[in-house]
Length: 276
Image 1 (cartoon, rainbow, N blue to C red):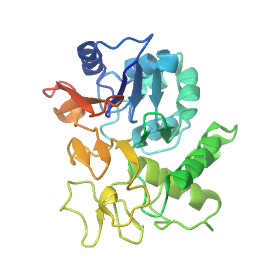
Image 2: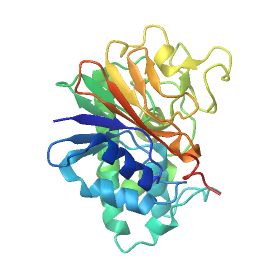
Image 3: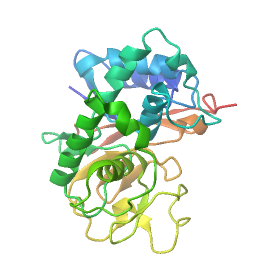
Image 4: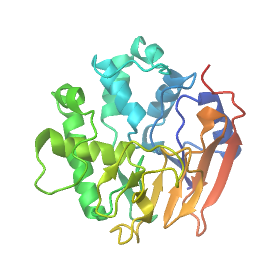
């Protein structure tokens, strides 16, 4: 059985199908890990969402910021962003079924046998993997609860920016959300820097890419992540970054995880998914 992790799709369904054909993906034997942001800004978000849901046990996906944005829009919350391409999903006859499935997906996936964990964005330096798992479970419970829309309504915001075990309620859940779905840079003390979105070197002085912070408690854990198209694809500090910026004319990226040395595969997108 082969296990492939795949970077942000964001509705680039045709490129996903090309990539799976290149991998000779066999749904009965292989498994796909999707690192979040299945939808939005690309042309075929509805097809992508239906396809991944239809894979059943052959796929694992973690939630990304665009996936949460879709959940917010479905509940009547969240801003209408200029480049959103979510209306087809929101108007689909199976929208409720798709939203139910989406909010039951994890924020963190760990496979002790393969020795890899997957998140959409990153992890703060003060969390070890056990803390990350506990925090993920906590937020997943909120998203799966009957009153999940009450949290969706207040999940947006950049504060608090520093973790404490004493955080409670909305502030605690918002911090956890921002870590798993928005993190790129943070400070050595663990404060989040959520405004910077460019490549390393363009951020505020003193902040670092999350994986570069000295003493990061997960530095000995192998972590797969997406979210950061300006970072580029590659291996850094025991992490694998998979967002090749397909949406922007870059690449859709897969990496095979069940080999002694990760094996990379790409599809050149050539601007086909770039929003007009």
